[in-house]
Length: 106
Image 1: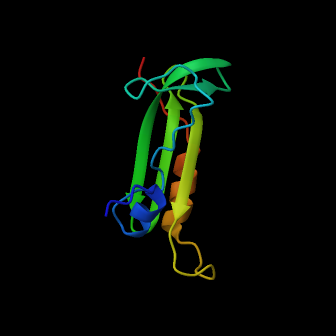
Image 2: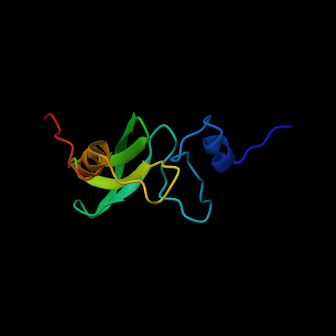
């Protein structure tokens, strides 16, 4: 039996919480090789770069504008067994990283 659910794959440890979920009703014209997102700083559709962060139980991912370096989308996921588990310094570091601009070399 082959289960294709991304959530199930993640719970089994074989997937990522940031696996792409395609939305066919909304398309900015990008492709998988050249993703396109809206940049609020440039006020236009731009190509984006992607960075991922994964250490211990903390996953982070951000998309940044290749034109100005601003973050267009980011997410941090902290996997714990209980809601009473306090955050760690690693979680704080990931949250700070997710909102940091990318310094572009010109």
